[in-house]
Image 1 (cartoon, rainbow, N blue to C red):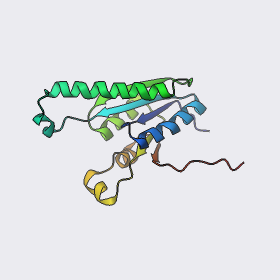
Image 2: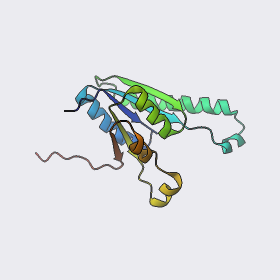
Image 3: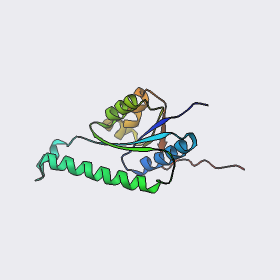
Image 4: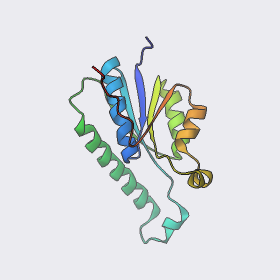
Length: 153
């Protein structure tokens, strides 16, 4: 059996991200692994400068919002016995996910994927795809709605 000591779970708080989190909780519970729950606040786009809010205030607001959402997620499954590290960083999602996976020596990354169509994927790219291609460890991608495992017994 492959031991899992640290599982990285990037989240954007979407439904696919929550589906991935359910898988991560099951793995962490089974292996008594630590979970790094990571949210990446993306750089403020130039168009946001048109708002009347100073950029630094907007960035701080985004970080506070992410921390509050992270706390809410954690409260939903705080009864488990494994440690959870809630991490909010700024940057480009795939870069920060890969960076954290390397720095923390993650044994596995479990993340949601939105399953955008071919046109959207061509223009936007896929964070999950970039992570899968360059990750220093195995990556489990979970698409929502996921196919539930059914116990045949």
